[in-house]
Length: 66
Image (cartoon, rainbow, N blue to C red; front, top):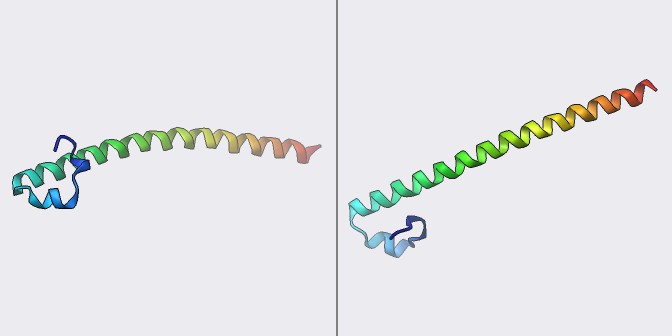
């Protein structure tokens, strides 16, 4: 049970209560780490997307003035 995310239902059911809680805790910590990484990724892509949309708006404005 080194990697709690790889325990199947039958193995999980056969564990004592304390080990089940430890496994659930490890899974929660791993999930939170992964979500934190996605948040950073989405902040970066949001920033890049904002610059692209602003650039498109400037180009459309220049096109309409000509």
